[in-house]
Length: 256
Image (cartoon, rainbow, N blue to C red; front, side, top):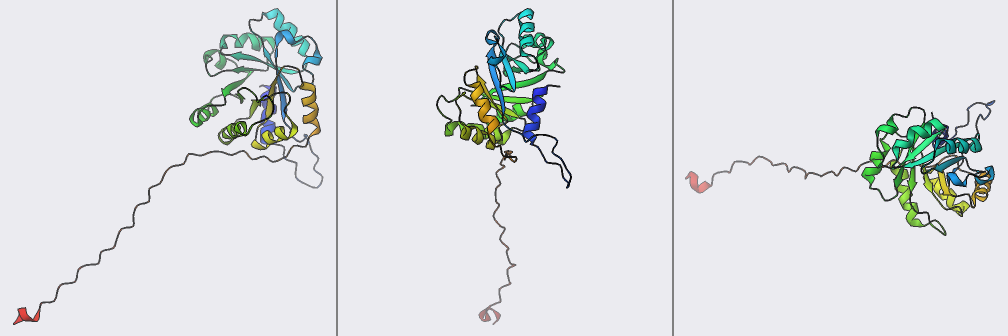
């Protein structure tokens, strides 16, 4: 089982303090998880990825020897691989020690379903229809990454609305891609939506982002909506009660 997906699920569910007068907290309060995407050629020292909860490697056409060197440098840090639509590389990455693989909806099914212990995360564009998001939520994957070009300067209201759609529909834990200069209020706004982690690209600004996340307070309870289909109802008009007609009384002239 994937360590990263397990951790995502724990964050998504939230931490419930044990009940009782003598109960002792057995786990820290959950907080936003931080993932960084790096090219395998960028792994020159531990300082490059220091502070990240998990490292997502873009490997390209990497040989087994280079992968082994990267795994050795990462040490105890949980790491996964960005496959994109190259699902045929999944088994090689799993054997190299990848905790999880990230793939696009265009990847082949067979190589990924063969993975037993390696976690599977699907990467979705943020402009999908509600129907496609619901379909993705039914797939046998552990988590979702909502991709898209991060806002360069600050988080926009448009992005908040797009992420709200995913939070309303998805039951799986999910991350979103952000720029490293995202502010604490923006991170807390994402957290309030029900987003469990952020993915940033490159090591620049990573240590500062780690400091912000560790020094912040994260609400224990978050709203995570579940959008249901709205079935239109047609109100039928009430049937009018018709009273039986009374027989007409004969005119006096007719009786004569």
